[in-house]
Length: 207
Image (tube, rainbow, N blue to C red; front, side, top):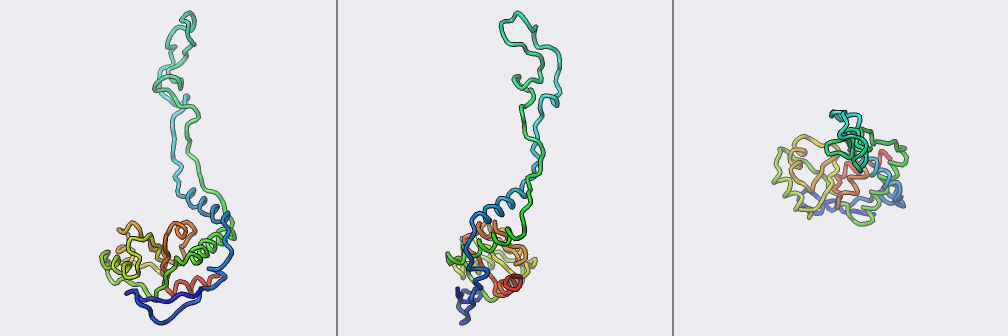
């Protein structure tokens, strides 16, 4: 697949770049994508949820009423889950939700996600994307020049400098990352991928 290289103003530079089929042209594996996204989301969970069960509730242990002769069921403790303020039955406990996923599966998932975006023509390529000073207004204007204003965009650079990070962090539909940190979830979650030419070349080297 061949892409025209644009500049920051959204104009064509007269050059084009052929996306390597080994990265952007493979047969996507949906199950690998599912597993990688599932692992990513699982790793985001803190797992610190906790509720007190019957043995952990601090309440009186005296009998609530006499055990026989009332015509109703026995009530032995105020800690009972049946009593208001009592413990919870099988409540949540702290746990680790993360799980292992092989590197080959993660790599296949990432390539599958990139191939989907290439097949859907959701990739934009520019020659350079730099921000001299933190300026969200100017940053957003650059996106509009590229017809990406208001579009959920993942901007993939060689390195994210502080000015670029500060300029983009207040835009809810824009995320900036470097080529070494791209993951399947971010790729699939974005409506459009904005690559800097040098980052694609670096990605091609890694493969």
